Image (cartoon, rainbow, N blue to C red; front, side, top):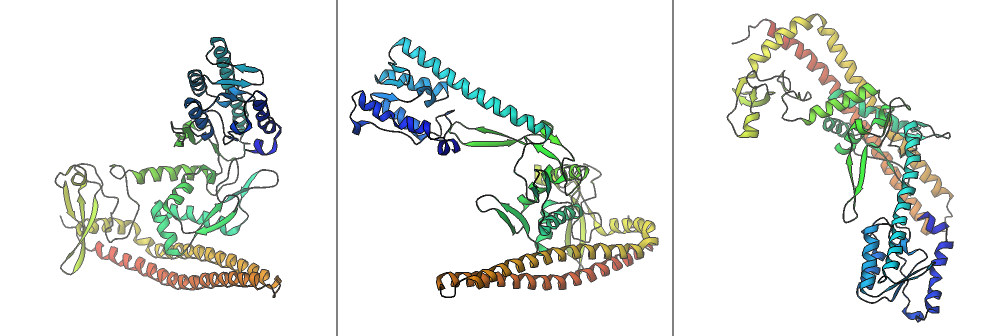
Amino acid sequence: MKQVVENVESTKRQYALRARATALGWPDDRVVVIDSDQGESGASAAWREGFRRLVTDVGLGRAGIVMGLEVSRLARNNADWHRLLEICALANTLILDEDGVYDPTSFNDRLLLGLKGTMSEAELHVLKARLRGGVLNKVRRGEYRCVLPTGFVYDESGAVVLDPDAQVRETIAHLFETFARVGSAHQTVKAFRDEGLRFPSRLRAPAAGVIFRPLTASAAMRTLRNPRYAGAYAYGQRVYSRTVDGKKTQRKRASEDWLACIPNAHPGYITWDRYQENLRLLASNGHGYDAARASPPREGSALLQGRAVCGRCGQHLRVRYREARGKLESWYVCDRATDSRAEPNCQSLAGPPIDEAVGLLVTEKMTPAAVELALEIRREVEARYEQADLLRCRAIERAQVDADLAQRRFMMVDPANRLVADTLESNWNEKLRVLAKARDERERARHEDGLAIDEALRGSRSGERVLKRACGRRPRA
């Protein structure tokens, strides 16, 4: 399209063919100019409306001659080109280019036009191969500039660096830290929602910039799977092709088939080893019915949820809870065969005896360090909530900057110009509402975080007491 806009001499020459047609005897009002395919590749007629119209008009006998500077460039595809020649021959339609006039019913003329079409297709192949070779050569050196994901920018020298926006950097780093803690992409999304955090997303031209919106599972998966965040230069992760109707499709390549993968090519948010571990964990989470799959830890009183394995079939046991004698009891159930093959349950085991035995074993190992464990839990929880509070402070700072900018714009406008002043005042009020909402959200979250820290500390102490009580009990058979 840039060539069509800037290099206009060829376009002017093609429009001048109207005068050539009138000189050959066609009335000016019967000369039809088809220019809807400008800027489109001639590699296929599937997405070229102008070429399809040309073929239709010739087939219906509405055209006496087809004119072009290089008529073989009407289609850089032999199948489309020879179909046009065949239709022109059936309709007795002539073909004209700069070299002369051709009659498709003549064998010699069709032979010459066929050779021109073959050379045109070969020319397109050579051009594409030459350009592709240059791109791949830069790719192998890691110098080909690609669109960067959110969190990276190019500096003045063209090197990839972390985004200078502190809120963007800290939010992305917090995502990887949260995933390392919870072990699941969906749990990471849930943690962001519970903490009231938003994830950055870069807008492309013309509305370039970064916006913050709620984290989604697809955005979390894209971020976790992107090798750029591990500081690796990667290219050729997808294969693009076109269907018969001209639609563009893509499919993912295996990592070993990427055209380039250069670890430690630029700064990253995680290490390459951490990235590989994340991929293994995501793959494990996706194997819902795999015997080797262990689910990430979740809420519940059962000590072995997601960890216990059936001794008969080797599948992971699921935890079920039911109300019994006024309290909630856990059961370890092996029902994978029921879900997949409608077979009876393999077995089910009462949870309390198993938990008591596990508690006895754990207490023997952990009682000397119980106090240190409680303090470590508190430090970990406090650090986690401090990081979330820091990100909320960044959101407040960004909202304050936007409000100050809106205020300056309002103060600089002419008060007499009410149409502009009213719009800027409305925008300023909206920014102030966003700022107030961010501050209120931070205060609410800080109150909830304080309660959560106290609850975590009480939970660690109660867990210590439960384990100590389990020491004095003998596990039931």
